[in-house]
Image 1 (cartoon, rainbow, N blue to C red):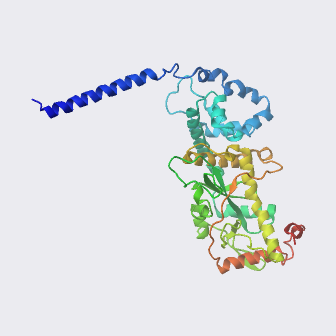
Image 2 (image 1 turned 180 degrees about the vertical axis):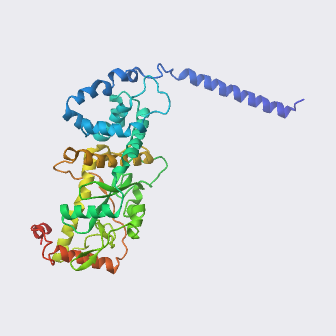
Image 3 (image 1 turned 90 degrees about the vertical axis):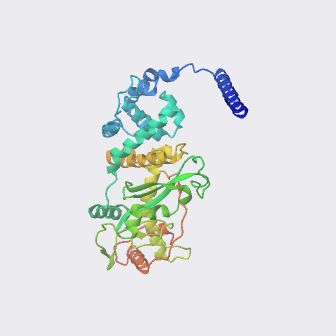
Length: 404
């Protein structure tokens, strides 16, 4: 027999269960019933969605096709052939499944237009949630298929890159130009100030090196906006290898009578190193130092131009990406891979004649350690070479351009 105390407990529990059941029943009555599992607007995707209604018409007008996808039909088909195998569903698809080619077109238009995810999805009659999954799926497929567009850092490639900088920018022994930009994101919940950068918005960092022809040779994406200084590069795999002299650099080349190592060029945010050339600092510079700074800045224009082309062709990078940072990383590397692919595939149409300045935000200069004496000697030797001590390295306009 239950004691009075136990009986009271059972009564309270039973009453509580009844109250919960009544509240759930009341909530269900108040909650409006869904009229449709899929809205009629989305159900008409196969007939009235943008891909089914406009894609064939765009093919008839090459200029409009390029305006929408920032590539020609030929490049689109080449790209589709490369990514298709990574987009084939692993399970049997539903009759109303979105075609693979449509998925590629949707994501390319989103990246190229810079329009909101909600707007682009609506024109293709795809829900915002489904479209978000497609963006991630296609971005991963693009990077998987195109990551080989970023070359390996071999001795032979470095010599080729150095010839490019010598021919295009008249800067010796340079194997690349390095720079970094902030890509704006919506701060994830509970992230506090982790992604908050010095400009006052939330971001992840894109750090890149390019060759003389604006092709990226190295990219790393994902450093927190709050850490967006030179540490994003020095803490990367290639940055560490470069500064520790662990890459297969070519043998030093004699310049101006001195053995001179090969290096990349950076702006004043970077530390001076035998493998990383930067400008002279300060306002009280002599004529030769100012000319050196002009010539180095001219060579560094390659990375600024690369960022300018990247952000102009893939306008999604110009706007705040309302996506989880890990997914943003997939989108950014996909854009960089597309950039290299299209420079190789159709440079004449992809690279503008008047390259716009990038709207992406620069990184904040970080603390720099004291440079080694040998690094200073290397820079001074290149300075003398560029000022014509050897008799053949000056540019006719360099004095005027350097303001001397």
